[in-house]
Length: 125
Image (cartoon, rainbow, N blue to C red; front, side, top):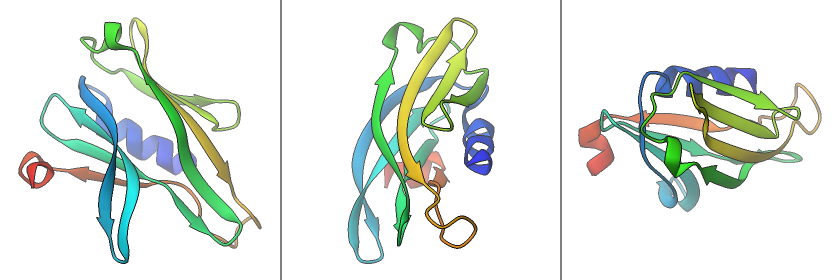
């Protein structure tokens, strides 16, 4: 989970959120829900949950603070043992994510988000 936070931080810090939504995305065997954050540079950051036997990661809910989207993101952090993720600016949280997760049998099964950063042309396709 710490690697997921670092990956998300690297993708969003220094930018503004233009849009945040859950969408259906194509996967090898059909479609799956993903959470997409569109940034002011046109890039889209896609978080897709996953499961592997008894381990899983899923976005349960999100709260976009519309009054703070004009502020540049300065960091990403978590509280409650990675259950609440905070994407924040100088004025406070811009976006909060409630995340359900379990490592299952530690060090055996995979868990965490698959995070994909799509370039503007790729995001539009």
